[in-house]
Image (cartoon, rainbow, N blue to C red):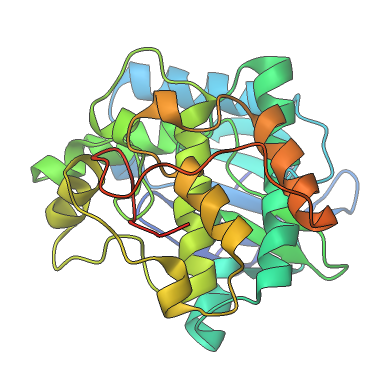
Length: 301
């Protein structure tokens, strides 16, 4: 039993690891196997309807199919006396949101490793299952004790966001995503959301990791959301972090095109450019022109 009085079958909840807007995460031991696991328990306030319940359970069961070294594994999902939870791989490490709070920014070489790993994970999820994460951000990216980057909440982020959205008191609370990293596609709630939404969010995440600054800082969530879809320009990342090479800035500018038709069309093409960047070869992506309304930041190439 946890300090909150939560009791779950076949699980001994040992310590709270963290809590967010929709869930609490515990370190736990699976009694049948003795395996150390993490358990995410949904806040009861965010599971209001049978649709919420079905969505969460179905998405968590689907997420349990994923087998990739860069995806946090989901082992089980269940409900007990109105408590909804899923059991997942325990990652001994830290999130990149935690790293940013401690260090301020991430070195270029490490960001390339993150981009490569997340790209591989999301390419697998999209190609094999047609799954879009919908909430890529530093909080959902971890690195374990061996230095392996792992994506969290893949397959269930949409369920958690839908639940949180139902409690939103303002317009920004109605969007499907985290304001600092959300794609324009999600702001507009496009019905045919695809991998390009995650490519944008990964670009916004990489920008924040490299520079220590969000792509579009704002005093309110609504201001940030408006900047993603408006004619606002972010600062060239090289102005904030001079170590960022031209080729990486060019890649980010293409990932962050506000018009998804101008972004990398899929994970394969982005992965190919990451490999070219590592090899010091010219990118396949061509620069977007300064001043275009679709460009996230103006830059001279």
